[in-house]
Image (tube, rainbow, N blue to C red):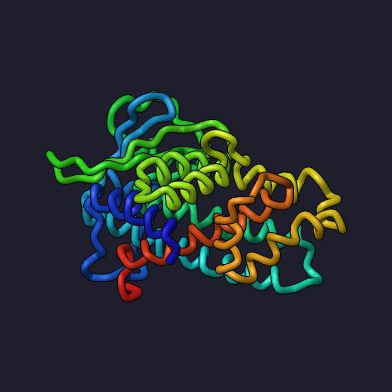
Length: 298
């Protein structure tokens, strides 16, 4: 594991999960176990409407931990499969570099979503039927507006009641934009670098996810350019600007060597490669988080 991944896991993920009193469900996960969205929208959590497009879900500690574990079981499988797919397409010279970047991006994005949820930040889309389910089971102020859209839920442990509470607020903008902002705020803010070299890696990763001074834009912005905005990147231009990305995705050690090169500067080629580096860092944090959420594959 790289020093950067180890530092971010230690300072951000492990501490956040501890503060939420997460523990592996004692009896494992049966086929009928519920994830968080199913609990909230299906009437299996206590809901209080707080303000327009803002509500609180209250769960027992056992139910909260089960919801986290169910989501992780499904989400981490998606992450693993997408990462394998991204590495396979990088090895195929017949596949355009633009599609390599899109595949790598989604591997990184899915990993970011799961890490946020494990640490108590739930970026979730509720559709109309789910919103109606939430309203129908809510207590108090039923006239408050609750509309479909992207919500951020922030979990905390209530030491007085022994319950886990999650306050959800509707937010504007795409889930992709929200997720990368939350990764910057949540994963990086608590990081403590023990020496100058590690602090340099933290700052670079910060720039790669679109945060801090002289940021490189979010991975989502880079993906949008390659997948939607500039069709020429699916041709020869993309093969030139994506050559470093293809190279480092084939070899994790190459990705870490590339990211720590002091001569590294922002360019279209390096912005694309940075998405691959972000994927590898998050992949390592996912692996160590799995040891908390589902030790021994539970």
